[in-house]
Amino acid sequence: MASRNMRVLVVGATGSIGQLVVEEAIKQGHAVRALVRSASKARQLAREAESVVGDLTRPETLSAAVDGIDAIVFTHGRMEEARRRPRLSITEACATS
Image 1 (cartoon, one colour):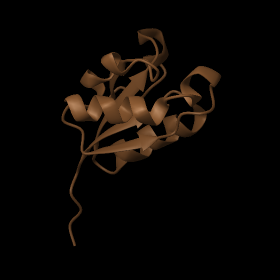
Image 2 (cartoon, rainbow, N blue to C red):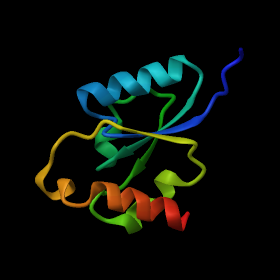
Image 3 (cartoon, one colour):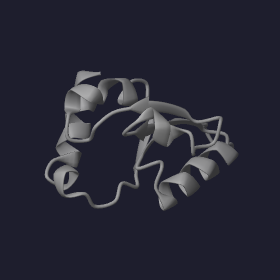
Image 4 (cartoon, rainbow, N blue to C red):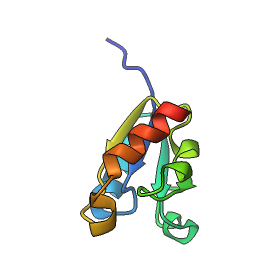
């Protein structure tokens, strides 16, 4: 059975697990978009990954990240501020795109 290549958003892409997910998704033939806090963080990602700057606690910054995405892989670690609303923010962004 042939697998379908997807456009995947990796949240937490610059972390240790996130970087592995980005690399493996690219190796599997998926188009990868990485949500990063700053453009400088994106430099450590694989060249093939598209990066989008956003903040999990601010849904208005996430629309570009989720636009056209087939799947989200959430590898973000614990951060006091993001822990309060990360799921709601991603859900809000998906609903508006």
